[in-house]
Length: 130
Image (cartoon, rainbow, N blue to C red; front, side, top):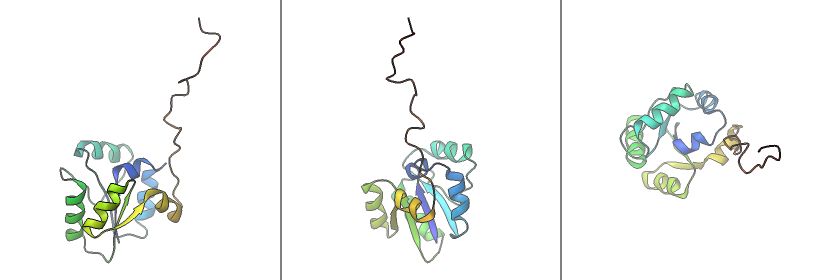
C-alpha cells in the first residue's frame, strides 16, 4: 500500500512521527502531499523528524497523487485527508479516500488536542490585575 497524508491531516494528529513509524509497519510507501509551498511541508516534517518516502514539492495535491501512483507501484493507494475537496481529489485521481478521524480510529492513532494551541489566558479576566 502507498499511503499519502494531506498536510492538514498530519497536523490533526497528536504525534505525526509515531503515525509514520506505525504506518511503515503495514505500508510500503508513506508521504505527504499539500497545496502549501514545499518549505512549509519540509519545515513541518523536519521539526517532527518525519521520514517521508515522497512529498508534493512544487506540485499541487492532484498532480502529486498522479505522480506518486505512477512512481510507487502498489496494490492500493490511500489518501488521508480532512475535507470534501480532499475526497474529491482522491476520487478524481483513483485513490481511496480516508478521513483522518476514521484513519486514526482504525489505526489507534491519537488526534491532536484541539485546545492544546489555545492561549490559556485568552478571554480570562484577572481581578488582581491593575
